[in-house]
Length: 598
Image 1 (spheres, rainbow, N blue to C red):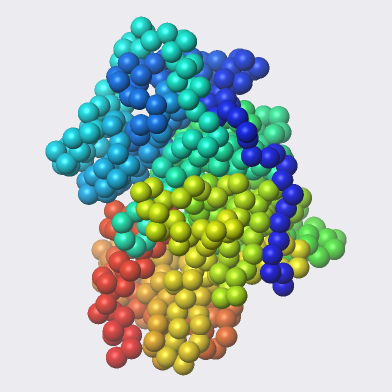
Image 2 (cartoon, rainbow, N blue to C red):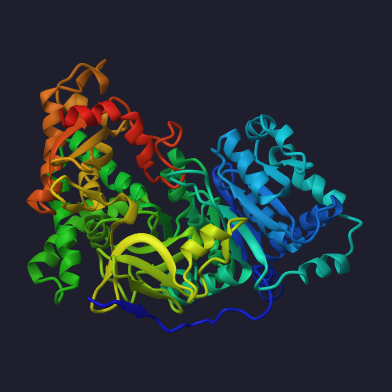
């Protein structure tokens, strides 16, 4: 194992300019290139580079006409949609700083983010969001401009800015610099109040350029396109949006996860960005449909062949027998799965949580290679990423070009490079704690670097479980394996200061009706009705048994409890980026955990 690893930079950090340069260069060099596609009924309508740049400039003039000064902060609270990109670039063109807010945020969170950042204006998507803002408006006297997208405010701003000259607009753009603050992103936070991460134009330009150049096969091939459905308020979604603009990739937006598969079929992306839970759902729903159609055995066999085929690619290549099996299942199963995802999908980029090698091998085995990355808001999204020419499934890849990773004495991963944020807004103490004087950033994650520089995340420093016997257990390994079962939605491994490891398990709402029918249970039965049902517990036990194969006896899950309801963002147990709020679950399930050890 290595202690430290770096990859040479491809594009150095910029010495001049800003993110706005990307859209002006596009408009000048490829004015008729379709950069965005927006849904209009069942069709996708193209927006050219020139149209986008013209609209951004017109909106920016409206922002200036409304009295926003250079460097001032403007909140953006909206679902993922085309207008998010318009507003983001317009805020920058006007010389201001954008502050994303998750569209599911509570009034208290909205109040904190806008007040802590010192925002003077806010874009709100709908009247539902306006109602949330109104609950705390009296506590935000400095937010004097409230712009609601659904009220046609962008057209209003364009009209308001007609008297602002091009010269004045360009003078605002000239106030931007690589060291200037582009955005303040408040971490969704699994504990405590969110901290504002200050990302500069240089941070994001360096990150975008080296991601795009490092993943040329994804971003820079003719006809490349992607459909973005993750929150743009999250750094991961934001980076991909910026990367698509930079690389001139055709980008579409959709906020409705329920419509994701139909949208994929009409949009036909060449690559996809998602968190592991999305890939789990695609796999599990396919397995569920096969089971319901009486073809469960065929799917299981096809799945294993895909995994074996992918593993063989790393070990001298598949033999003739495996190739023949793979070809048969490609016609029977894999081709249908690819068609369900639009038919042109070749690559996927996964981040936000560990993917697990099982899913990685399965998807590569059906010819959709998932490139797993790792990073935090504080690192402008990715610091490591698997690349088409540097792929080791089960790892989060090597450092990005220009980035460095090392393992501290206690196993914590430290990260460095021009992508590391400028610090926490209004919080110098937290900044000093996170960034060493020599520039190394404390990730809070435990990991290791193999002999080729590939990084593996083994746990979260604060989430490591230490049993009563002193055994350190990283819950992520077990949780990923348990969630692999089609019937299970979420799980949380517990056991800190306890004699053994146990697990809390929730059932997947979409899978439960199919299982209930297969198991011969009454149609009226709910998960709550079947918590002690022998068949349901046996299904969960099989998932536990499978997960326990990956760990030692001391780390194995000995007991579990099924909970009556799933954990959700709306319920407060999950963050908008689908991370589990362990402290919330621990508090809510205190009695359940106590019962496991009684």
